[in-house]
Length: 131
Image 1 (spheres, rainbow, N blue to C red):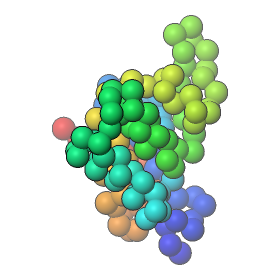
Image 2 (tube, one colour):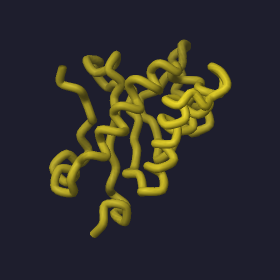
Image 3 (spheres, rainbow, N blue to C red):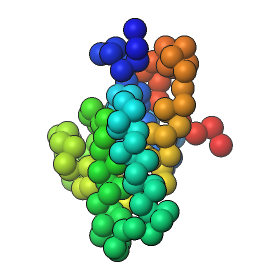
């Protein structure tokens, strides 16, 4: 079955700053389709070519890109200790632009390089850097 057709096909991402925390905040994604990869790639192309008009536009397109394929988050709490209910539109309320662009986006991109066999082996395992 193609990975995109498998309803159980998903991967978890833990931010680098949270990787040593017990029950870390976790972002759960589904694999991206080719069209979605093109959309994410367009963000990088626009930024590399200097086609964004300023910092606000850059932040907007980064947040849009890291929202693609996001199914849910787990173990995310606000400063008062209240669980933050999932709403993809609120992603920008819980992560910084730096976390989105340098950490989350990098792990999303590296997850797409997994083969189908790799995906089955790592099912339900967080995507973590080992550096």
